[in-house]
Structures are given as C-alpha cells and as structure tokens.
Image 1 (cartoon, rainbow, N blue to C red):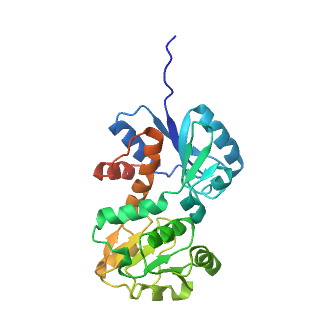
Image 2 (image 1 turned 135 degrees about the vertical axis):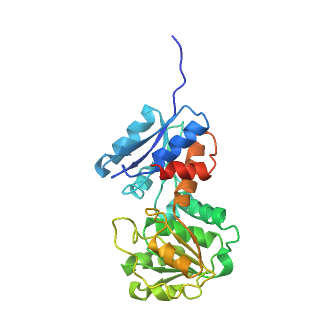
Length: 279
C-alpha cells in the first residue's frame, strides 16, 4: 500500500461567500506554481464557527482566510494572536499549526500599503495627514498601517461617531475624529485619502460627500473594487489626484497566507490581477 502525502487544503470562510474572488486568485497561484493543493470557499454560519475551526484541520486544512462576519469572532477562538491582529481587533488569516494550535493574523494593513507602494512608488505617507472615510474593520487595519508607515495624523469620519471615537481611543492622539456631516473638511491638506466604506459599491448607496477640498497632489484610494473604478476615484482623478483602486489590496493581503500555507511567496502581478477579476 502506497503512503501518499496529504494534499494541503486552504480556503475562505464567511457568510455569504459566493461573491469572493479569493478562490480564483489562489487557484491561479496554485496552478501557476504547480502546487498540489486546493483552495475552497465555505459558507459557515456564525453558530457553526467553533465546530468548523475544530474540524477543518483534521480534514487536511492548513489555514483559512476569514471574511465577514467572522473576522472578530476568530480572535476568541485562536490560540495565538499576532500583535497587529489584536490591535486591529480582527483577523483575516488563520494558520493551522502542526502542534494543533490556531494562529490568527491580520494582513489587511500590509496589503493596503503594498498596493499603494506598487502602483505609486513615489507615495510618501509622512507628507501630510491622511483622511479615512469609515471606521469598520477595514478602516482599523488601514489606520494601523498608516500610523506604522509614518502618517503624522489620521482623520476619521464615520456615520456613527462612537465607532470613530473607538479608533481614537485605541490608536491614540494622532487620530482626529470628524462628524460625518463635516467629513468633507478632512480633505484640506490631506496627502492620503481613503474610502473604507461600502459607499459607491455596486448595489450600495453612492458616495455623496463633496470632494471639493481634495488636494490635486493627494493619493486617493478606494477599498471598493466592484466597480473597479468607483465614482469616488473618477472624481478624484478629474481633480488631478493620483488614484489607486482597491483590487490590489485584496491581492497583496492574500500573498502572506498563501506563503504560510503552501510554502511559496506568490507574485502579485497582472496575471494575478486578471485571475481575481475573472471571478
């Protein structure tokens, strides 16, 4: 009887999950590098999360990506939580270790920065304040990353102010909170401008905050990538700003997990981008 090595499995859990582009991206990398592994989307209800994390490693899974609504809950189920995941309050990457422990990390912030550096090598985060619309989990990762790379101030506006205040409490005095009705005022002098809300996404409400205060030398990015170029980015580009779409953040945040699970750092290039867009 032949003793076959176990084929490594990874995947993404969330609910809903059918819309995820991650399977197409990881499938592309697996095929490109000739790795005998599989990446599987799994719709896991909140009530089944603990059971899933117990069972999947036994079935040959080496790790998972985590998306809504589980990114905060998995922190309480993991055995090891990285400092950045703890600071952000959410994890998007799990590694199932050989010793049976679950390792939770958050690569969203690193993916955000890598996307901007890839497309705008001249970007200097220390050149001026950053302005971030939204205060959800993605915004927390973005704020942590911006402060880490040297943004002197991060301005935040959220439709519910207490959530923005929580970021100031967690990240310190460099975070300045604006009321949502005064969000346009954040743009004056801002060197980096980020939409981390779902506003402007296909099927969601429009991004309606006036962008008159955008500096023409600012770097503007939208975490939304459906559509790839949102109205927010179109208007910013019309005002002379450098714009970066949000798809690259998805690609770059995925690469560290792939490396941990399958043993090879994948390249984030045009082919990877095309694979994600094909989903």
